[in-house]
Length: 322
Image 1 (spheres, rainbow, N blue to C red):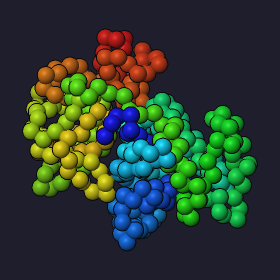
Image 2 (image 1 turned 30 degrees about the vertical axis):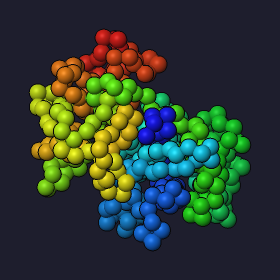
Image 3 (image 1 turned 90 degrees about the vertical axis):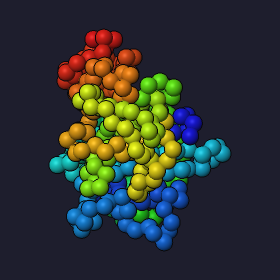
């Protein structure tokens, strides 16, 4: 996929404002999952999540969207929790994205985690797309809530999308807004591999499987790589793929793409997120920042943060960041 046709974004909101329902509609409209297999909260895989109707664990999914301009775009969505106890999950998701959909309940308005997650997204330098959800409810006050969002983030009331994730109203317009307003990822395809781990889980047969966002270069099976947290240990990549309601193997992941890899990593302690970077052995001796990417976006030789020198949590910094 061409890099300018990739969009990485997440959904942030207060608890019970409709994040998972919106993710269901996006998956359904893009044809990512067959309609006969669709169910409510399709991205929530834990029994407790489905029982209580809340999102606990972040999940990523790749969607292919045929936009109105005739192009095919790769949309990488990361669904995030809304409860205050799982803010760390949200912060990890933001590091792999360029944009965030801010969902606000049209009946309840702006609440505590709305502000908390918004500030996290703004600190990460993401493009914010404000959305009013549940406009179909009898108690919805879209005009009042749009004015509140205008006062909070400065967005024009007419630019705030008004949708019903449950009924699917205006959700296609939201997909177009993601394509038009979220910037494509930046990265050098022919550079040495550099990737960010934002999540990982343990498989009893294949070891720890990290979820990554490729920053520079390409990762493919058979290549050697190392982690920035323990650069002396070199691993061989056995499998790479993308996340689409499961693991879908592919030939390679290029700069800007989101996916996973299998390299027989012994445990998740070897792949802590965030702050762990993957490197090719040729540059494995470089220093790596062990702070969060909220403070130092990618720790690259050319900083993308406006004021990289203000970072306080980086254990080590690149010379150009100091």
